[in-house]
Image (cartoon, rainbow, N blue to C red):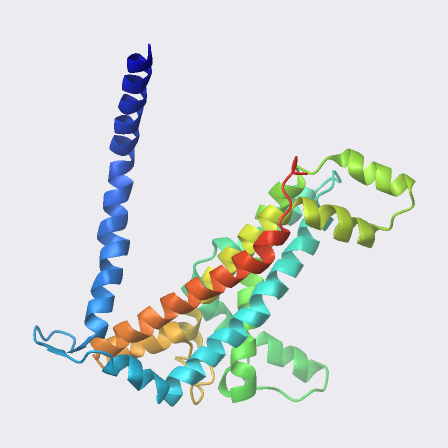
Length: 300
């Protein structure tokens, strides 16, 4: 009997590996191998299109310490992340709670809030370039109609990055909202009814009932938001090209500039590896802090 069980388990394992093989091969070819190759390039002086490689050791990593533009782009990326991720999740949570009702027409509102997610990033960036345009952009025309001075949103160092962040909030809050809305459907309605009978306000219900019960989904959304924020590239490329004076230059755009404009593949790989390590460190920090506060249904 035990031999039959062991044989059945062995067959199941073989079948599992067989079914996983295409995905594992894909990951190995397009994820793990490029990461290893990038680390190898970071130890060399490599130029785009030049087959020659000159070993440098840790010189590229030492170069980061004195690279002022690297620290500026890292600061811009961190600022973008620290603002957009929590604000987008807060907006998404409030929208999800507001739309989690049985009123007529709610499907239309849900579609309207989710619609920006479906717009291609490049197209969305071009639309917002038009909205921000000085002189004829709708935002500046509205300011002029109110008697306020017009603003060159994307060409002022202090406003360019916040302008991109506003567009990002508009585009991705709906995506987070849809995920949180699905999580709200799993929260037992009896809890809200009992809270209302006890005179608990709507805000207290949100803080003490909704948030704890959907905390696994919130945790997931935080991780997704973090990964998205560190991959920002298309908005910067379309809207500002990293300007003015590198005020909107972020790590991913700096990697693109170094690798494809300056053709320094070795240093670009060093920047990419640093970005990867930064994201992994942040995810580990979130797992240690927020991960311990996640409450799963049925957990005691």
